[in-house]
Length: 397
Image (cartoon, rainbow, N blue to C red):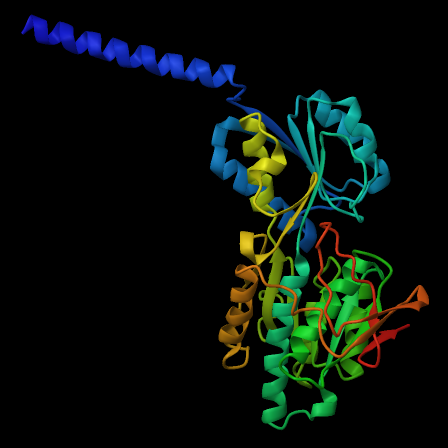
């Protein structure tokens, strides 16, 4: 019996020694047991854009538990980025994520070469020389916008079939903050998705001149409804447009499509569906890369453009949520899934394509013919389509 105990004990010691050796080898290869991760938000979690981004922080904490310490700074204006950035660096952050649009991040990154700075892209990064520890990323939102447009188109088709509106009343509205290519790309994809179901659909766009003004966004949406829009969506940060649709629906048919955050609670009888950029895949992969001392771009699944990355449905960077089965038209889910399946298989050239001509609003001599199509996010994560489609898009001053 004693020999058995001795043999068992020796075996356990050998296994323990082997485990310790492996652990030390992992440490020698550069692996880290713990990371401090910083998050800088341009607003607070009460607005859809920031709330949606903060979900990545929650996913990170859930996956790694006490292996990560997270520090978040909210309501940081772009021009006030420097102080919180330096503060996070001094607190020992190994990697910091930003959802703002400040160039300060890229300028300050070289001062902290041991920290990885990851920012949601805010400009065309193709050919831009950046510090080795500076990275940009963004979900290919146009894909979700196009699928949202299909949901809108299905509802419009139902309204026409039921005799509630005529084909020439197939008007959708888009409440946008500013006339950036990000907004234009989004609402063009939304319109073309709707037109794939109801070819007569046209779009009205209004710019609020601010990212976050409940009163202004609601006012603009109310005007769109008065002007005949039957489906409205937004690229702004408050629930104003959704509330406007819900309040107006008692008098006339009008529906809402969400972006970044579901609006089913504030617009239960008018909300159709929501599309959101999923920041989780990038954030989790980037943290995992730093944990293992690997390059971020070698660890992220997506379309790699140097230190800039984008992706859509194919890699889980875009998704549709809260499909309101009580409100959407019959067959909507199937129609959406058919297109999502194409995106999942890597096809996207059908979105910005058709018998359309677009005009650059800042330079009328700059036009684009979409007969052969346009590929969004081909070389950069920031959306670059900036043309207003003639005859079917109206910018309301």
